[in-house]
Length: 267
Length: 277
Image (cartoon, rainbow over all chains, first blue to last red; front, side, top):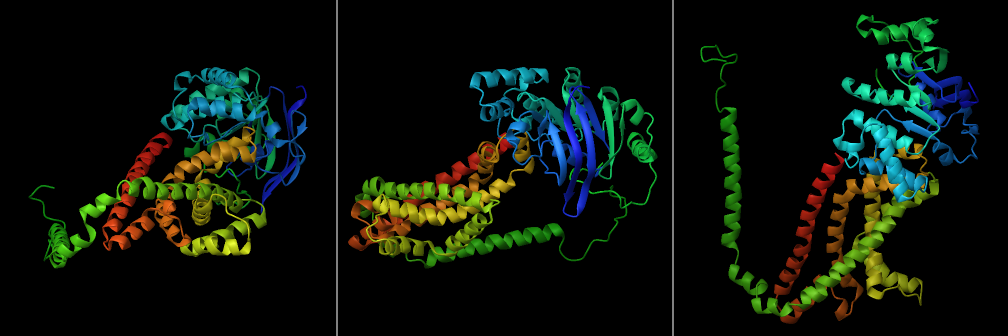
């Protein structure tokens, strides 16, 4: 591992009295693919959103590519240009065509010329296999296609790091594969990726490292084969058994150590 | 269920649901027709026609009613709308600002200008402003005054509409824009406001129609012959000819604009829905 591309130091985040992150330390090296897993409300989405400062940490530091993101004097817009983000709900701009979704940010943010922006857009659309949808509006695309356009939009900005916030959780099961294939391609190309996901197969096969979070802390991390295949902690085992075989779960008392997170998803 | 089955519930006595429905509908038709006939029979059509439908008087009004009066009405409305839109946008953004005094000012502005009759604003602009700032002229003369008066009122309503439109754009849109490196201002202009305007196109056009009618308040500013708009023009002519036909013609001229406008909005709405849905 060369210099860490993403570095998180002593990160705390509270929403009012609700402490969602309770001291996270994490390093992600250049070209590394890290999957963050954990139960709903464990703080994993909040952690991801703290990396590009969509959520402002209460305490602690975040560095991306050597720049401190949490420094109040840093040009956050400049830093974010280097960090691509993909959302659970795609968040394409519905009033723009697919191509315009890719060209507008390049032109407005990176000040690229019309021709260059169009060229970069076309390249990235073809990377995600959606060249023929260039002139379509997002509403006419399937969820899987929309998410691939969202990935292409982030890539068009030439990011050094990609953040994925449950990119397949809002998709119909048969559409998940297309999106994961694009992500796998990116991983193979050496993109630094931080992926919050419930796709254990993807984590096992593509991730260099898996981080299991629960209750706002990192419970364990390591190679996917170890964390997913032979978890050391009871909490990890419990989570994985429920995730991999939901039909076998027992009815149990709700415990209050579950921290309501900002990721607002029910799984 | 076949005919041999025993019905699950015994039939109720009295009217069935179907019978009751047709009875109620029939009664509504009867009342409506009776009222129309009643009004038509009791009205004195001859006198009405005499007062409101004198063809030679109506013919006399053309082309001035269009080239002068309607043109001025449209001009007043559009300039008021333009001022209102710009001012309304500023106030909407102030209302959503993180700076307390901005929010406070915008709130007070909206409450005051929505709470006052437009007529008072016209009088205020026409009388109070020249008194308070002697020597200063509102640029554009009457046109400037009308644009300002209509704009001040419209801005209050439009600010609330625009604010609602901005807030109706999903939060993820701002997050996506920010994560791509847009500054808050640029994200607002490039991403959020275009979507907000699609949402508020119908209420905004409704505001245009309201302004179109409110422009008749120019009556109270004291205008020259050349600056008269539809209502003033119609009323002047009505008193000259001692006949109300000009009022009817002026009224029809208003409808000439407002009805097609409503039609256009409905078309735009369906189009926007097809694109965004």
